[in-house]
Length: 290
Length: 159
Ligand code: FES
Ligand code: FES
Image (tube, rainbow over the protein chains, first blue to last red):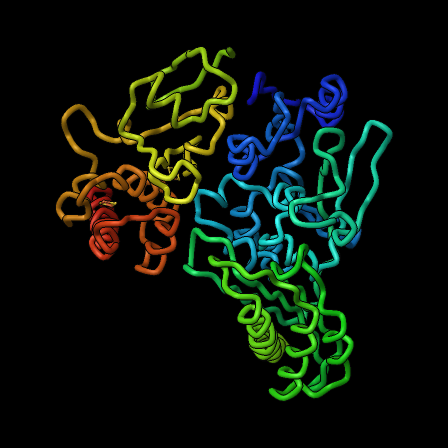
């Protein structure tokens, strides 16, 4: 358990503390996952380095063609952000579905990514947005695509005992883009999803120009349904096409049987259903926006 | 041990705690504020809801040290002496409490909701209390209580 709880006052300070404790210290933001993991003995660190008081990491802004979200930004702030609702509605939709209001008030999007749980709403939307993470180390900073940092269930290549994700960035979605976020869960709130499908669709008249489909948690990490995406380009936006895309997307699902989340068979079938539904909704949204 | 200095219900307090104690533990076991309940202890039921700088959080998964230098409000901070707060009275009048274990959490979630949105729709109310579970009432009375509290607070404001 924890022997010390420290507040970092800058990114450099946080990294310095991590280095000083040589693997015994770990970064903490909202703590909504970490506190429980630690109580269950799943977090060996004994020193917590809290990053929520570092100035400048609480912003959501548009800069140089990207939208940037700082490491302290909570799910509640993203769900309420006019900028995100306008330019990346899929992320606002996803963040508004996490846990309950209290969890959304404390838990951060970046923390959600670093924890790398497959049942992560925010992270699945970030897959749609082809987001990148800014990783700070004592040697310098680098950007990493989100798909690179997920290595498996709960395994993130970013080591919170050594390095720090300071921000996430992505390009805004095109104005005419329609989004849909479909979430299957046992209740409407306070529960992890059995399945989520996040879709962003661009159309030219009745024809699909581009589609992005991200799916979780039916494989060790969220994934993009690239076969379905490729199939959709140039097709007419209609039910039969959406259903076919759903089949293609379901072929890539590898859910485990779970007493709580449902059988593998059921969840695979539902991938097809939710992809079809999401595409239909996104297409309608395109018409409304266009 | 580490020193935690915070303001609880308007009073500055200073306590020595283990760094891994949760805010709920400190409030209950060190400060005797047992109005805050721990039910699931996993951030899944909202029974332990308190306000941290005015924002509703589940204190059972909030490291107590996060309250360093900040304002915490618990259910005990709502009422004045023996007089119930409008929200508490609305819960009583709507029979929104049976075993009562979830009630302080619902009331603090309601406080946060009405502070941010004094005139909520029924839909807003259901969303506002969606982080709280009740195994007894079936929620209808609770939603009524929140609506009643909003109405009475608005009337009070007009006076
Ligand atoms: S006791 Fe804290 S959320 Fe249930
Ligand atoms: S009154 Fe018993 S749990 Fe809500």
